[in-house]
Image (cartoon, rainbow, N blue to C red; front, side, top):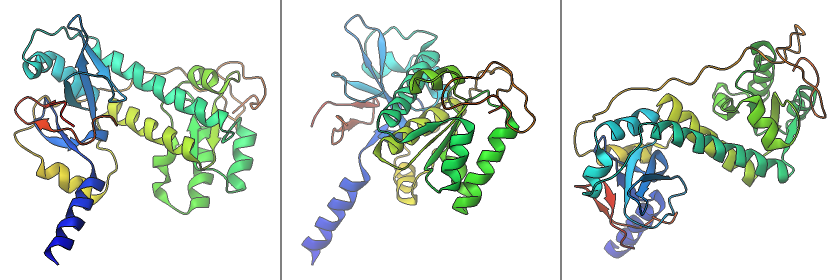
Length: 286
């Protein structure tokens, strides 16, 4: 019986996944809540968003405020115990890379045939019950965006569907990812590529706003057990300002020309590695 309980506990821990220590806050967290950094051969710190680059890794809470604190407090050099160059604009570089990953995920969902773009097409898919998540350009007009959001939440019967509404990319970024001009609204059906898109969107959102991600009680308990010291480097980064409203399908306003198909005017490698709790490093041991 004891052997069965031991095996069950081992399986549960394996399912939970590894914890890593944030070099700034000194709190152990699941890897999905952290960003891994490694030192390049020339001593420059490099973000490893896919968590696959070779070398000793320094883990930092996945928020712009924490990355800025790591640069300010020289946490990378202290953790790696060597001279390291960490540029002052590292938080902005990480944000650009996260946005690029999200745009790539949008492109993957589009190639998988899961995406439609354009206000009318999105509304039709919503009313047909085929929408897993909504995408709006960051500068989309509030009237049209809110109308689609209300339909989405109403049909799903849950006020929590706001977590599945993506507003992290600009119209230019959405248009480039989807391959259509001036995309303001899009929607994705359920599928593996859409799940990946939502994960990347939540990751970027959390990085910008510093908000805690949605996670299970078990994950929250694990993170709390991993606390090894006081939190430092508190702060928050606001999102950059965006342009004026695009495409309002009700009032007929338009901040810029909208045309083209689909639119109308007015619309782990490190899993299982040990962690050095003194330095915040993964030790590289499998």
